[in-house]
Structures are given as C-alpha cells and as structure tokens.
Image (cartoon, rainbow, N blue to C red; front, side, top):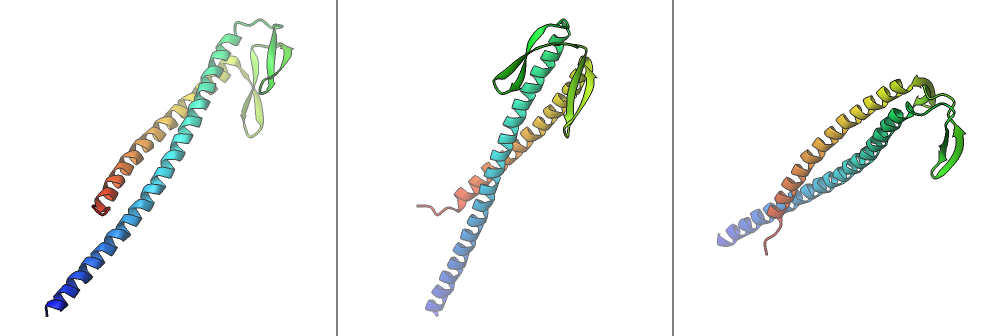
Amino acid sequence: MSSTRAWRKNSTQSASKMADEQKMQELYVEFQLLTQHLKQLQQQQQILAQQMMEMASSVQSLDEISNVKEGTETLVPLSSGVFAKAKLMDTKNLVVNVGADVAVSKTASQAKELIEKQLHDSDQLNRKISSQIEKFSRKAVMLRSQLKELLPQE
C-alpha cells in the first residue's frame, strides 16, 4: 500500500511540474510578444518625434517667410543635400501637399494652421503611445516576476 501512495505522490508531483512548465512556456511566449510590441511602439514614437520636429521647423519657416521680400534669391531643396537657386515670386501664397499626391494653394497663415493642427494631432498620438508603452512595460515587469517564481530554484 505504501508503494501505491508513493506512486500517486510522484504522479501528482509530476503532473504539477508539467503544469508549471506549461504555464512558464505560456508566460514566456506572452513576455516575448509583449517585448516585441514594446519595441515597435518605441520605434513608432521615435519616428513620430522626428516628424514633430520637422513640423515645428516648418511652422518656424512659415513665420519667417512673411519677412522675406518677393524676388529674394533662395535655395530650394531638390533632394537630400541638393539645392537649386531660385527667386521667390510669391511669399503670400504657397503650394501645400495635403496627401495622396494632391497639392493645393494656401496662404502662409493657412499652411501654418494646417501644420499646427497636424502637430497637435501628432502630440495626442504621442501621448497615447506613451500611455501604451507605460501599460505594457508594467505588464512585462509583472510577467517577468511570474516567470521568476516558476523557475526551478537551485
């Protein structure tokens, strides 16, 4: 009878150990996926920050163009590091890309308003991403703690 009890005890311990290993694998996979998602969110946030800096620079340029006289010679970027000399013919009306390869004529103040709205929207998105990063980081810490508890003690 005592050998039957020992067998049941070992069988129960073995089943418990298998359940712990299964749980540990599930937690590890969840932790890995969460870590990947966090990295993607951080990359999105970096790209967004760069875009926001470019928008802020555009707003500053739009403020400055009102002080430039028509006919002033300037450099116009053609591509990265390549410029053409040009004369400003009209500093009041600008051509603005509004997306989907569509460009429209806008005044400098209208263009500035448009970019400021985009900047505001980007800031809101940045806040949401930050919130998600914070939430997922807390979850990752919790998962790491659970994994440590399930690891066999030496």
